[in-house]
Image (cartoon, rainbow, N blue to C red; front, side, top):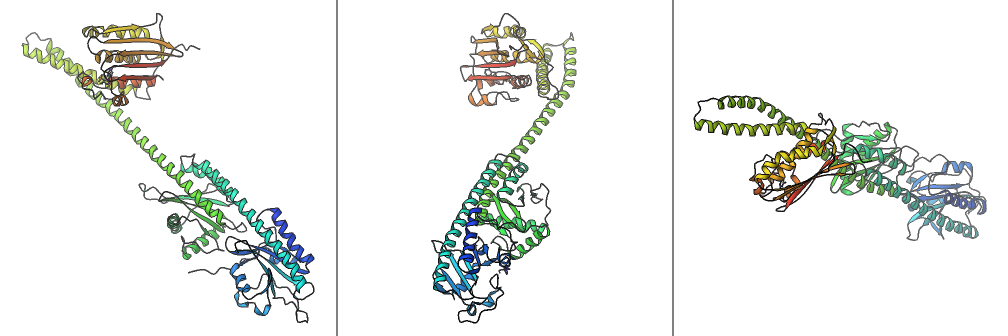
Length: 601
Ligand code: ADP
């Protein structure tokens, strides 16, 4: 089904905004040449526009003629039908009024108010003299229409020759003007597209994409406004996409219009086509005539004349649509604009997809953070709840152990229970510490701490265990104090953990080296061993709670996998860093970098 296309009313008699000023001037001059030098009262030069209509671009002659003809648009077919009946006068075609198809619609733009003179070759007001202007491929690109001979007669041989020369000039001028217009438009479109790609693809939120590309789109397309609608992610269901308008306000559409837009966008994406909805055009294949009329009625309500409708998508998925609007009097949408809009639909589609992926990641991170904080709270609560009954158990054990009349087996059992309870106390204390040092609401109260003293003390405490394994322990400490900025007990815990691990995970008679250095504004504690080492994969997970290496030699040692997690959190909250180098079977080096309490500079 197709609609009637009304003949458009002429635009107001102001310069039409087409091609560039020099081209327009050249065409105007040719029209004036016809009126001033070839003996005619009116000359009008038209060009074929994207929608297949001839539009009058330049008129020379009386004010009345200029006013009436300027901007008049006629379907090309109408001219072609008349030309079939025309006499061939070189480039010119003449259709005497008796042959004109009066039933075809309105008369040609303007009918001069004259009485034909009394002669055989008298000019009749309805006579049609026109030169169709073809390009080198034989396509019709414009026309030169001439009317109102000064002498009141149909032109003779000499006059026709002059007119043919003007027709050739008009042909060249129209072709140049159209070509220049096409080039200028291509540049403008390429520029708009480049700006969109640059701004939109750098953004990771839909709101920013819309905000940042709005200006480039509205300017580049000379649009009055823009709306962008995205379809909801499948997993979100429910509500439909939102429409962002160019002034930042949200346009409310009826559910019916939203549904039309969504269905049309999906069809348009499948067909890879942008569509124009305008009173002067047939609707494209993505919109039915009924839907088109509904949209037009809505546009009229909000003062918009036409829109360029572009699907947005990535790969096979249609993600939304972009609507650019124009008000009455603005130029019509061109093919180049529609093609560029589709390109932009691809770029924006990708940007929307990226924004969605980013949004999903963001949500996932938030969920994980929530889970992590829940885990922290759970650990802290459980550890607290276990601590009190355990203290009571240990108190009773102590009482029982001090009883004088215990049998040997009872005493052995009590000792075993006591050892087990001690171990539980250590695990619970580690859990409580882990939760404390991971709590952002409980920050470090930092003060200068002499790490050299701490290392000294820690080494003293581990000497017994190291001696039992006959390890060679080397300690290299500067003679003077080495102050780090932090919490004494936490830093003591860091050193103790690293040194006791080195001793624990080194074979008997192996060696352990402990060093403390100043390095610029940092202090560096190095604990290196030639022990069992850590495999590459295990290294990646080292320092996560309860993680122990998969190496059977490591598993054979008692441990919980909490020590390094505590170390890492303490170092982190001190603004330091933990570096680990290790090779399975060869040994490991742990380095802790902490801010010095007295920066070098
Ligand atoms: P634990 O020693 O209680 O298991 P840690 O958190 O201190 O827990 O260490 C985690 C794991 O890292 C250990 O189980 C061990 O496999 C490995 N590891 C730590 N320090 C060393 C080291 N110096 N040499 C080899 N492996 C180590």
